[in-house]
Image (cartoon, rainbow, N blue to C red):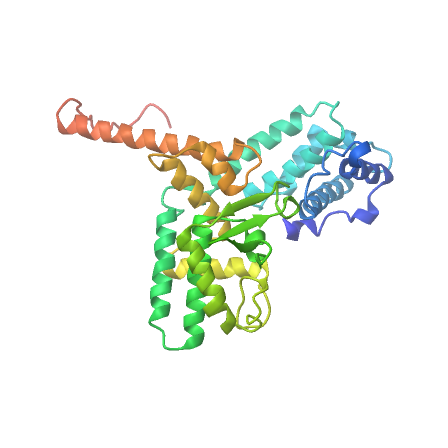
Length: 362
């Protein structure tokens, strides 16, 4: 969305009515005031919404709308929405869905008394298309958590065979990164910014990861204790491996270091994880897809429980988590049905007719 957002109307050029709308939506009223409808969002999310709304304003201007004289909710007519959708042609269904979701978040929350049926219908239809286009949810596209754990073990084994100290240290670090993401799939930003002694710290005999609500996407704090095996791996990495990297002698600061001096940013760590999985599994698995792997693995397991996925992934509600269970139920039902058909055919209870050629239409 960022490349397209740069073509939007800059915030400084918004009409006064839109500035007032944005101020009202993002207002933090404090203990004695009323918070705006978007005040709970992180700065990055607010920036995304602001850029997307600016993109719609730019389109409205190009469509002949006078922003100064037309009230913000009156600009989103069916005709303008259709032309706006047409202007997004060439972008992925998921990106188009994101732009319309952003527009709905601003206008529907800013003017809840208005009728937004056309905009809600567009969001609903585009959401369906985006869901259908998500190839990473296709069968076999996302590895299981067990596959990711095996990859972490393979990387560690390959590292122990290395004679070069640098290569061995990088392999041990990479193995721990993969294992931690597989078992506790944090969002990329939180994973990249883990700090020794603060967000990841020893308590008694195990390590605990604690993230403040201000650091989380949903503004909800997250805290969990690592297993004994994973805690031992983290302790070994901090004591014996991390110190080999520049700046790693001090047991403070970012958990993940590299030989190019300085901590990694989230984008660079994401690319690194993708390269590791592509090399080891034959397909790129981003840190975000580790979250899908964990949710899908739990949903398809015999003891899968929807209540586990929400705290595991740090979701604010069960709505997102439930999608994996619906999908898993559908996949499971389809497998059972196909199995029943095969068994019936094998035992002669069902005779399959050859396909007939249709000639009654052109």
